[in-house]
Amino acid sequence: MLILNCPYCGVDADETELAPGGEAHIKRFGPGSSDDDFEEYLFMRENPKGVHFERWRHANGCGKWFHAARCTVTLEVFGTYPAQTFEPPAELSAAISAKRPGWTWRTFS
Amino acid sequence: MSKALRPSDGAVWTDGIAAVHQHVAHGMITVRADLNTAPIKAAITSATGVAIPAKLSIETGADAALCWMSPDELLVLCDADQAGAVTKQLQEALAQHHALVANMSDARVIFSVSGAQARDVVSKLVPVDLSPDTFKPGMLRRTRLAQVAAGLWMPDDDTICVLCFRSVSEYAHTILKQAAQAGSSVFRR
Ligand SMILES: [Zn+2]
Image (cartoon, rainbow over all chains, first blue to last red; front, top):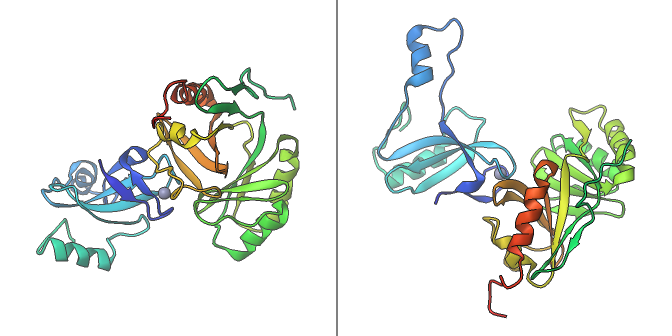
């Protein structure tokens, strides 16, 4: 059972209060974009063994979307952060580096 | 306006380890606005006479109560026959701000579960720690009640109010009564 702290209301929300939103930090490519960019946006996803970034929504709660960083192997949750950002906060990246030295995920490390 | 009343509105069920009461209509008004902005907070308080609740809490005044629903949403509870007037007051008070006020009285229903075992009964249905040290009167928690969204708060130590959508009220009523059925105490009594 996953428990994520919602950065908007502060509740430690049980997985059953949350709705999954798939991978985080995906840049949208719409009309006018190249086929490669559109394909990347629609279909290409990370499938890491280790550090991963996801979107979740506190659906049965305050209703807000947020981001979560966690480990797909141990299910350890490194942290959660608000949705209005293109990258994880520096403190969170540092905390992940302390626990998983040398981690990378897309352009993050 | 015609009076919206369901057969179970006002029903009080006392055949189990806690009483389950479906309230007759409340006035319920949704306010969406940035609750961290001082002029917006002042406008809502002037229109309702109630202070803005802290995060995850409910603030009760003489004529209304304010439920904290999210960083930009409040639910105003008032008498059903006052809902139109309070909605208008809020709309006027917030006219100069980026805000939305809507009379949502028909959208939701409120149940109360009361008795010494009220916490145990509701605990069977929600992923929330309702122990007395953690969940206290004055707090408000939106969560999941079995399969539907709900809000919880405690008007006093032996009563839990359950807020849910009217469309699932029959389901909520049924599971609350089932969780409170006779002989289903969590601890040996
Ligand atoms: Zn939340």
